[in-house]
Length: 496
Image (cartoon, rainbow, N blue to C red; front, side):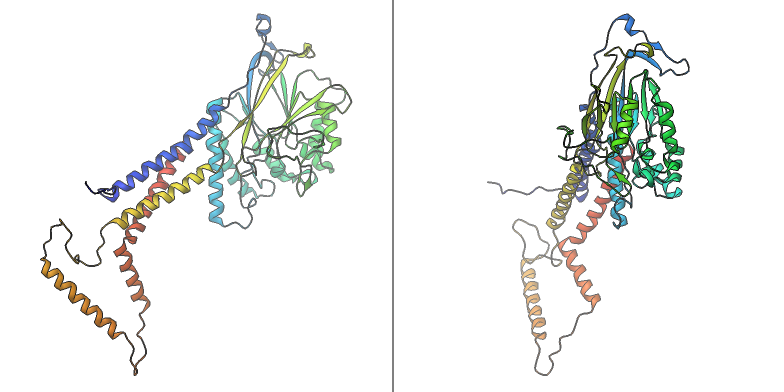
């Protein structure tokens, strides 16, 4: 019976190549396939629309605005909430290297999954719901521009032009502040780079309203002035609603969480109605009622909470109607939720201004789309790194590193250029010399001081020991492999 032999490699190069192949498979799965798989699970909801020839004819409402058209065409919109790019403000006191690593991890997660969703869904429009930078409200202009470049590198795409197909003009409290704490210079800067915080965009004869409820919550006129003017001009008590309306507000409307629960898709069992420095989790009851009474939105989307919530607000005026509000989950893995997500909305509108009150003209469906579960890839990378290190260590320690330049005795079946008698003689001579060294190190009565080795001699002896055991080779091979793995990872990130 032949003896069992261990797995052998011809050289260290084969071991490193095998390790790099394993890393390539791991990177391909987590950096390419996993985002694609999550995006492929996300499907646009189906809208049942009228199929008659008369209903299919679009009705042009405004010759100057091609979006102001009512038809049965289904429009698909992707909603993104609270990317809130992390920085030193997010983790004060964190080591700079660790902070950079955290930023890189979160940015890569956002970029690859956002890109995968765009590719798979190909939405007609993309709307963001505020809180783009974690410290946009207090940063200097120079720092802000750097963070803006970072934001654009993650989310900006040529196909979706800002203000046309890519709407990022709704501010969050991390962008400009909250209520009387709103920083007017920061709001002006936000308007310059992201767009007007108060706007109405008409799509398929449906009004999509971005309302700066953060500034509208202030008591100082210098802060609430622009938002109040927009609100009163476009949604005054004497203005009649002629189109379906979808409202975007960063901060959710007021609700009693004991009466209006968020539904089964929320992670947390509690919806907090709290406030503190530069934040408030819901708008005031008075402002919320005023918004519902005057805008009368057919659908509301909000952010800020980071978790999902789906409620139906009763009419403040006592009418027999409700107003549905969906608080969209954060897209970021760093916002305290286990399962980041985006929201998708499909709608059709066959009505024009003259027959708005006819029922079932504005039809919509909206779904939650989950991104890959965070940190699984990181755990897998750590495990792969440990296994790679163990393989290299096993290989280097299993190599022949004889204690001397010759073997003590010839091995069975192994050719030898030195005679057996000579080997035995050398071995015995060495043992005698070792005994003399031991005897000379025994202290006598006249001199008990043992000579101390210098640090250089100790380091030299340690280096020799490491060479004999193969640890030096292991460290060298581990460093080379690590650099190659980093280059491979960079390639996957850059070419994604």
